[in-house]
Image 1 (cartoon, rainbow, N blue to C red):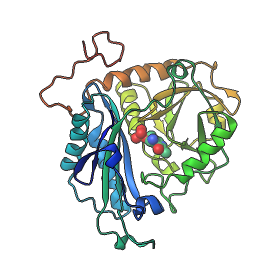
Image 2: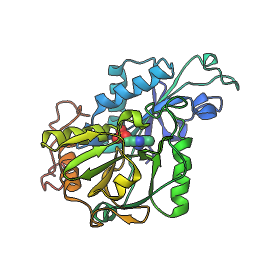
Image 3: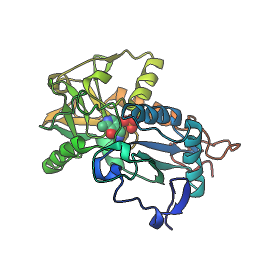
Image 4: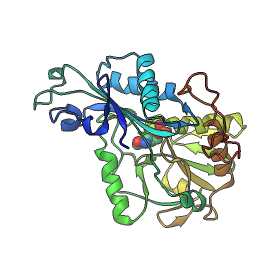
Amino acid sequence: MGLIIFLNGEFVPEERAVVSVFDHGLLYGDGVFEGIRAYYGRVFKLGDHLDRLYESARTIMLQIPLSKAEMQEVVLETLRRNNQRDAYIRLVVSRGAGDLGLDPQKCPRPTIFCITATIQLYPDELYEKGLEVITVSTRRNIAEACNPRVKSLNYLNNIYAKIEANLAGVPEAILLNAEGYVAEATGDNIFIVKNGVLITPPAYAGILEGITRNTIMEIARRKGIPVEEKLFTLHDVYIADECFMTGTAAEAIPTVKVDGRLIGNGRPGEMTWELIKAFRELTKVDGPLIYPGEAAAACSCNCGCSCRGE
Ligand code: PMP
């Protein structure tokens, strides 16, 4: 059965969820979006995702005609219409339809849509074995041009890098910033572990400040693990004890080979696994309930599946 999509105030079957060919989101990548996850009947970190969506919109001067509370209800109601408790959610606000010129002032009404579907970025065995990645020649956009902190519909920079990864036959790629420091991956943030310290590039390195990234840092700090946001180079990655990537779709995934160098002993690291497990636990209890009044039962087998105790 097809999905029900929220589109501009209506819930419509997916075959009727169509936007104008004059939409500047399509013509120019002019718009903002979020990728969000629902687990166990709750929308994980929904408040943080909405904050980032509205911050991205503010920077591109896109007035979202819904309050955050209304947007939250859009997400929850779309999940309910599809009877979903676990989902990958794509929330998009584009500039809307205008003329064929660039001018956003010619677009009177933003287009808003919400898709609640599923996603599996990597097979389960890759979480056990760890990823192999390469560094690509494409550099991350500089903040003065197209700021990576804005989650805009303009992902060509990342797609260039993804094409390089595809050509090399690896599933993810590391991008450096214009100064040559490690920035992030095509759709994930990067972490390394060295001598018990968890290290990730700071927001000003030219990254999207990932919500999974921030959650992982929060979990680590709560566990008493020292966390540093600092610039580092590929040399630091090659000599790290552990490395992993984080993102809403990927969650946290061990990374065991970079540019042909084994990281640590070439197997997913201990701290990486400790953080992944804690992250998965948090997904059971964080975020607003899709069905208010329903106590979102964690799975009875405690394996992190979505059996909901049934
Ligand atoms: N960096 C980029 C470029 C991304 O597109 C994403 C999201 N897919 C991330 C990092 C991770 O962000 P989050 O944890 O909020 O999904």
